[in-house]
View 1 (cartoon, rainbow, N blue to C red):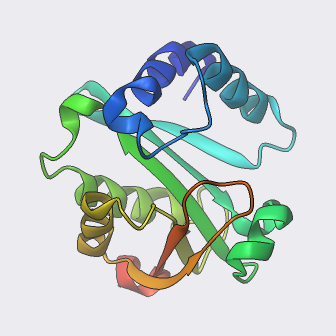
View 2 (view 1 turned 180 degrees about the vertical axis):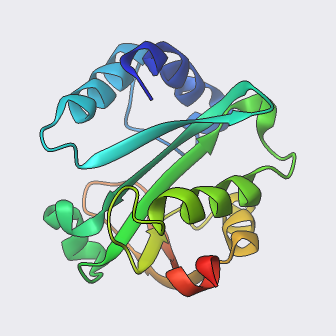
Length: 170
């Protein structure tokens, strides 16, 4: 993802279909763009952002980071130093069409567990417990429930799901 992608990503994120589950604390596209810009300018760059492309069309955003890079968050998730975390959303027109689990498995195989970004033995994701379609998609990709946590100052808990390297890489 580049800074040129920020208007597209912020528009997706403010759409009702995405906003109900992802980035609910963002109030407008400028706030979203500023948050991503700050993370993209971080040195070292702790979070890696990617645009998902399906059949040559921009179709969503996925990001990954090592949990130990964010100790204030990891104190709630409580995973070891070799655990990555991913966040993902598809653009509304690509939702509920069966792309999600294939996108997730490909990203885990080619980026998270390949050594291209960092060294990870496990990967976590934290949808809201009420986001049943996302949970089903992550299960289809190979994730399983680990625990449910509540982050202070967040309105909903996180349904922490985990997958290990062997599940993806064989």
